[in-house]
Length: 135
Image 1 (cartoon, rainbow, N blue to C red):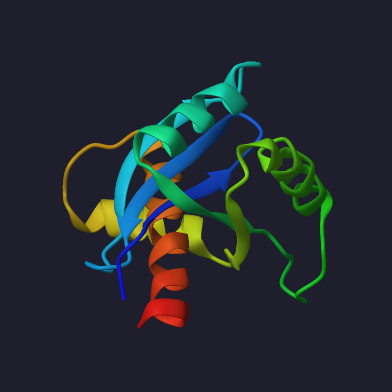
Image 2: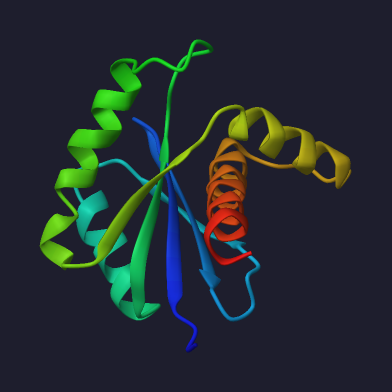
């Protein structure tokens, strides 16, 4: 089976955390953060094309009860804007990924910014997807 590239997204209203992975290696790594400034769809498209990703894994927010929230709707609307790329788009539960991302960054003992949390959260989302689907 040949490997394929994946891009993971942690979509927020201010920033979008981006991670990348290859199904052959199965390790997601933080890539960058994209500011939500009107050019975010183009910026994500450029990353997807540059990485030759055939799948986009989008973190899917839900509340503690597993129900959709206003953030869920925001993520769904944003994701629709990526459909023109003609790539497989999948949702991956993102429960507690931001909390885990911040704990992981704290454990490194180095300073970090909000954007680092977003990129790390995207990495956790993508790693979860890899383990469930390519483990």
